[in-house]
Image 1 (cartoon, rainbow, N blue to C red):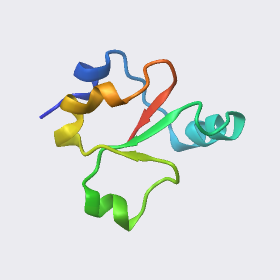
Image 2: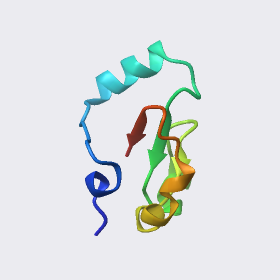
Image 3: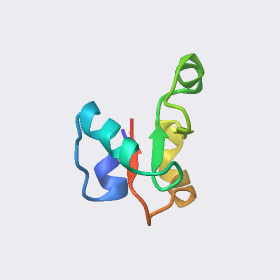
Image 4: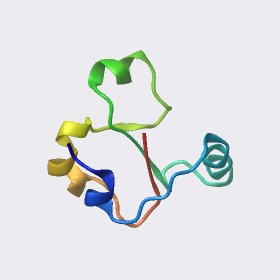
Length: 74
């Protein structure tokens, strides 16, 4: 199993209220929401603007993510 901490280093866990407050105070495109669920789960519902990279593919695709902005993983 891939560990998010293994791929990204330091990881903070934030409650949904803090994430919503962050979103309200920042423009879309200045942060990334990464959805690591399976495609069928993503299709049934996801945060608008979220980027889908299923967890089993994440290790090989981290280069697609910006390292210069906040990254929220769910």
